[in-house]
Image (cartoon, rainbow, N blue to C red; front, side, top):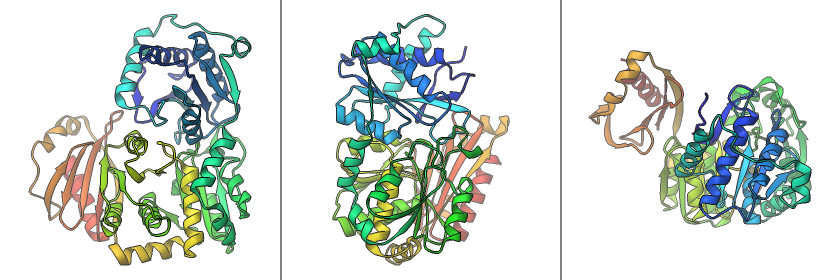
Length: 473
């Protein structure tokens, strides 16, 4: 029987294969039992879902199981962005949230993400406990359910609309009037996901001339993974390129916790660059101070900006939950990762693509410059950075020998001196001249993800070639 396994962003699986109603009910009961073991549950659990197949049905079954366990379910009345669910957990002071989403995975996946009372993604010790409880119950009848109407009548299920309160919070963080005054024309692409009625609504409210595409629910996501990576938004790029009046293109992924940004000419701007630009903007224009955080796989462009402003950089393992901890504890002004996750002080301790898009719009409006112009200005102050990731597929023989390659730190790599090895998540060699290379082995397939960075493009190419030889030779 398929085992329940939580990854960096919850438990995910293929619909009707391993992600089934029975497994969802068992995992929900495991969450209920875990909460009760900690003396929690009386403050209820927020239950939401994204725009995938059967999302509302999965959420409804979870609400029924929670109600059967005597835990109140606050059930979202439509597909809801992940950051909105995080916001609602905090606003209601609930004991947690269960969100049905597979984020940017293809349409035939779904997932269950649990967030504890502090609003961020559950930490490993929490998901391990849920996993153990769920796997011990597989194949057993271990839960009690209440019908939805009975749950409503008994006050154990309450239908909610968390949109208004979340938007009210964003109005306090984002200078919407400044965006409106700039006279921008902004293209918006929710990618058929939960961002519909959020990002477009707030920009329209500010008086922005918006062009919206892909803004109806489609569980197939137009036939592409709902991830706003360059390869998946070619229609959006063509739109922005074809309209000279558009100043900016903003997109959110399937559950609106990640973002994709296009400059006025339709150029895709990498999240690594946007994190650095936004950190610089927050300090120079909004007076933010304090540390910044990034994952181990994220560009050190952010580090250069932090040095420029005399700020501390905190490095985390991959997984936004670790950055979320710093937001929860008010230790950082901004935190982000190379895979388009970002949040800021005073907001939810989880990724928020809606917030990120609005911050970029504000930055363009306030500075009066395109993103490429801002990037050139920042390069002039802190220097240039070039970053790329490659995936290396391992043969069984190479996979067996892989771990031994890191028994000792090499003296040099790609002709550069190795200064230090970082092992908080994978093996990262810090090289001279601000260059580095990171090796992270996948936990689900025979693949090593290699991240490289350097100050010059040719140096980056040498690093990646050397990395391929280092792993596969």
